[in-house]
View 1 (spheres, rainbow, N blue to C red):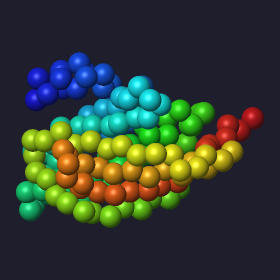
View 2: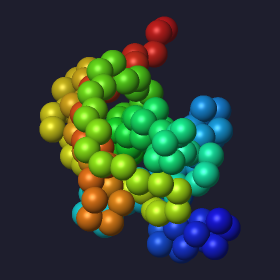
View 3: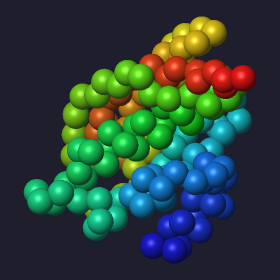
Length: 141
């Protein structure tokens, strides 16, 4: 697994600054800027990510998609945000081993909300379509 992680890091991926105990436990998840203002996220599917049917656990894919929402919207966050809406559709399945990626776009950014959509995929196979709404959290004085 360490050679796979070394490849991700060599390809420009990095983990999110700071810590998120849940994501740290189920990940690690990585992100990178594509050079055109968009972001891509990735992780390698491991045995710990598999459900009883031998496929990636749906909850893992949704958690990864939530991570991707924030990465996709990174340049629009402007401070802390929380997920206030999340939708997903399972489209395909994968097992342990492959690189799992996500990409997407910000559909709209308002003063208080960010609307984002994307897909989780491996190679040319789509695993999950998702969309979400992020709310900017205003600091209290």
